[in-house]
Image 1 (cartoon, rainbow, N blue to C red):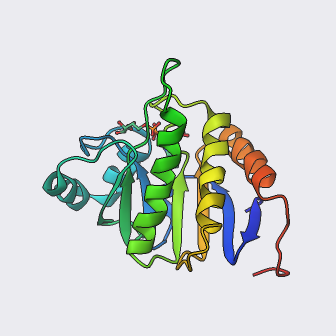
Image 2: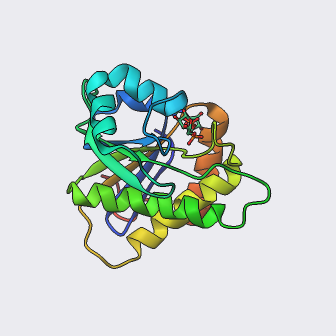
Length: 189
Ligand code: APR
């Protein structure tokens, strides 16, 4: 774990690997509006989590872009799945940055509704949905800072952002350090 910051009492760290392996209160899925599963994070979560997740998704039905729904994590080491639907990137869209930021805020709100202490978060919309990694990483940590600066007491003591490959890890680390320039503010954890 190379990327590590602490801000307003919440640890923000980075990992590279498969997000399904994290034993956290909630793992965030990069889902679609139909909640039907798919490839990428969605495919991995359903494959490793088993049929209970899809059954719970089908009960719920749909999730609008920018929003989240919560289900069981089935066979995953995590307790819950927060299914987040990010925007599909297009060069003509005018509000996709706002929509992606809204998606991250929806994730934090969903985590707080669970009184979650630790969640793992993928780089939403940067795969199939084509969002440029740099812009998406900047938005992810801008939303994180807005959330932590909101002044509300949060249960979230730890946010782990997960990159699947080295390039995304470096991009996340660059934007994490830009947005949160100070090292650990309390001498470790
Ligand atoms: N663990 C962590 N990160 C992963 C994993 C994994 N197992 N698999 C993929 N990723 C990374 C991708 O490399 C990318 O950086 O997650 C990021 C998001 O990519 P996608 O999973 O493709 O999600 P997204 O771009 O938001 O597209 C969502 O794709 O799989 C479908 O059903 C899904 O329709 C939805 C769409």
